Amino acid sequence: DVKVTQSSRYLVKRTGEKVFLECVQDMDHENMFWYRQDPGLGLRLIYFSYDVKMKEKGDIPEGYSVSREKKERFSLILESASTNQTSMYLCASTLEWLPDTQYFGPGTRLTVL
Amino acid sequence: RKEVEQDPGPFNVPEGATVAFNCTYSNSASQSFFWYRQDCRKEPKLLMSVYSSGNEDGRFTAQLNRASQYISLLIRDSKLSDSATYLCVVRSGSARQLTFGSGTQLTVLP
Image (cartoon, rainbow over all chains, first blue to last red):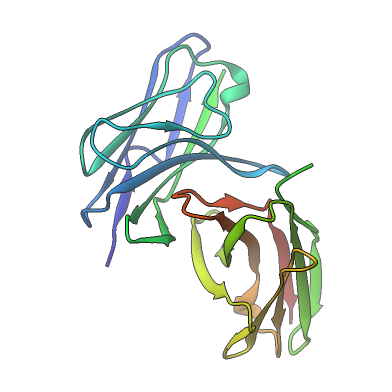
């Protein structure tokens, strides 16, 4: 069974703090993704990565950066958290040759005060 | 205009009812189509792919109309356990990423 884990289920941070969200998958998947999910807006892609040290911007990359130093780990960084980044953050991964089935982590509910 | 549009609902139906969800997509280059299911406070999971000829998986039937850029999901004989949000998803060409609709919420009532 594919397992995607995220470092925290709930996180509360203050405006201006640097925030790290970690995602780890155990199935040797090449592709990893970070989304945020907000009511009425659905899942929106922030960044994705198709290989170690490779990254591509998604639809809403502003205010975020990512890091992929190892194949199994994909980190999302909020350099200076703002209240409009309060959201549910979901990580996902897929095999390169089977991109249609995304396996999601349980999500991190981030609140920025 | 959103790339993938769905009626957000909510749809409240009695057990045993048949319910249909619709979805439209704007990118004519979209190649692959799916329905994902997301239970309350859980992560999305793939429910089924949608093929041009239409496909069925038990009580679930998915249809694709490329000319109208329209996808549908039909659930027959609804069960309480079908209560969830159903996400319409498309992938364009050789893109690695998926584009998700905002979801349709279904509640099946006893």
